[in-house]
Length: 249
Image (cartoon, rainbow, N blue to C red; front, side):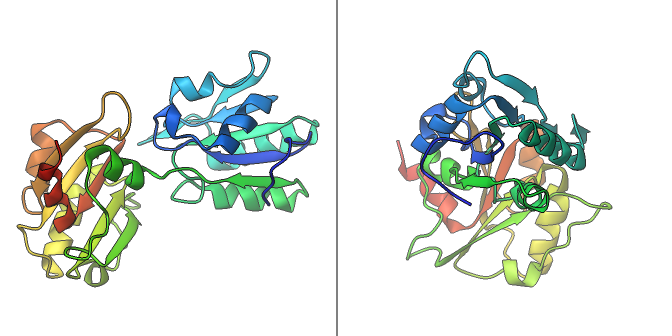
């Protein structure tokens, strides 16, 4: 499932591209991209990272954004399988980490079911990039002794989360893909007991050159997003650790 040598023909590497800044790639990710015969990449992978692939490599964009899928997930899995069975060295490049809300597990299962060898290369997930980029910790002994990652991706106009478990003191909540459900998230967390004045921040394109952060509170979350016309990809962080942003110059 993992390795350190050259990428073998007929093998797929599921590679985390990190949050966007090409200098945050792992060495293993960089080396595998340079060995690729075929590169399948998402919309959250920066052009600079795609450019690391050899000029001879086939580049296939399979990006998914809110409401827009270039290829459905099943078609991506089939394409990975076909390319590997053609004896090519395949790199599936995914924003962040392939195993953190990246559907890497689904792709791994599909490939293994077809007897295709898979290597997994972790990447820096967006939450870690956002915290480092804007100088706030996700955990801090004076603020948060736990940190929870959840997805705010809407399904059938609802978000199925354990709101009581999330609305705990001394905890940081990181919500991926939550922009379209901010009203639900803010309302349900307050109903579950999290105070409306709990610090929060919307972080757009963390670690990219045009990254931006919009500090707010839970009760002002929707108004802040509307005032700044916040669009995906945006990460939502909730918890008192967000208040430490202002201590960083």
